[in-house]
Image (cartoon, rainbow, N blue to C red; front, side):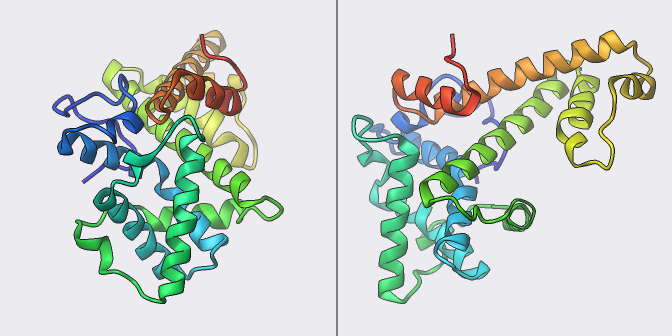
Length: 251
């Protein structure tokens, strides 16, 4: 069962922070392909579910089923293995595959057995619904723009969880707490906390709050880039996606 947010354990066949899972999805070893499938599902299921809800106008239960079925079908039919990086970005290829899959399901007017014979993914559909309520269904955006927006949201959500685990491993919980309070909770709070307020709350000098926040942001950027490298099939695609997501050319 794939984790929705966390990195793989040291016992996994290949480390996601070192190898593209898009490339691994075409590996000759079926176990490597399965692990790559799980990693891709963890990264892409939310934008796929949201597109099914907002663009295909599916009811929640139908969208949940079709999300599960799409990934089960991808594993069974080798959908990810057929990707050609010379033709398109992987996320564009994936969304195109989703359109075809959803259209076929609608035309057939039926549903496969949930999971297509595979064990269902453990997915937080309630959390995805809450995000739809908070952020809307991308009115005014075409499907490609909307899919990209939600993919970026999912990417950063995974990277933030990676940051949380990094803070736990390295004993930098305060660093993450400050980041969470200022950068994650701050914009939605009635009044965004000040550096001075956070310093008083945690018993730190303001300069240390500044240092902690800078460190957390640098680490988050590194983790986002790691996730991007996992989800791209070439250096060119990686750099292109990094420019779109972060506005910089990674060094």
